[in-house]
Amino acid sequence: MNGRRFDLVALGECMVELHASEPLGEAAQLTRGFGGDVLNALTSAARQGGRTGFITRVGDDPFGPPLLRQWRQLGINTEQAPLAAGDNGVYFISLLDGGEREFTYRRKDSAASRIAAADLDAAYIASASCILLSGITQAISESAMRATLAAARIARAYGVKVAYDPNFRPRLWAERGGLDAAKLAFDGLLPLVDILLPSHPTDFELFAAASVLAAHPGLELAIKCGAEGSLLMLPSGPLCIAPAQATVVDTTGAGDAWNGAYLLHRMRGADAERAATLANQAAAAKLAHRGAIPPYVSPSATIN
Image (tube, rainbow, N blue to C red; front, top):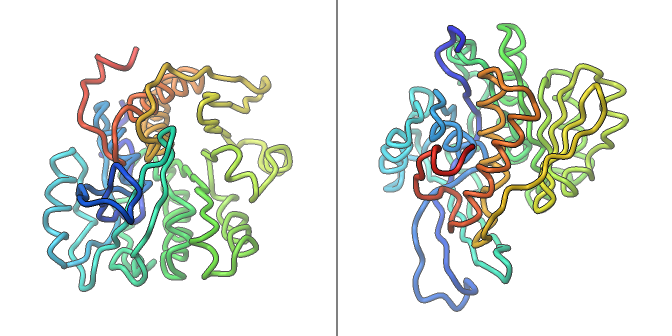
């Protein structure tokens, strides 16, 4: 363990989650939770003993204080997640056959989407081994995109590893210029990235792995491949990591759980193959539960 305060911090948005076990328009009852791609990753890392912190803005609506309390209960530091004027985003999950899901969002102008580069605390970022950034954060607003780039620059200045999940969401980017805008955001951030964490095939609309590795030979590329496991692009060549056995109830947040586990174990000295194996197990454990944040299960019961 190094001398830094945090293993992993992340910049992004967490929303209130309302999910149903039937088509949303026919549901008589909704279950409240919360979720957001980087917050889900922090939860995964924290539950495996990681020291984590969240950089965001939390709406001062009735959901805000409970969200902060629940994140702290998960072991996530919220010093850089103050209450701010405005609402928290809300999303609804309707489960489909095979554990797949359909999302409906109400997030425009959320408090978190108004985070700006000026809000960032350089000392907080510098106190981490790694910062996780996301294409979703880039997509939710122009100010959040600029904050993402500023956070990467701060991290690089202080020797903090920069991890980036492109997490391409066409509907979210549609209001910001579509695929072309997403590619520009990706290309603008990539020179500052140490660890790239895309999902296949979704994120490969943005780039080709071979060309990215040729242009950035020191880049660590770890690809999430769903039911096929994961793929590492190593100096010695590609390495496929077999998926862990899973019972699929809900795929929400599985890739995020993978990110959190992978980054934690990499920051704590595991090689990429070992970290990906443990990350596959963390993702499989998430698949067995509904919602983005699964019930807590002791790592010793699932991670070998």
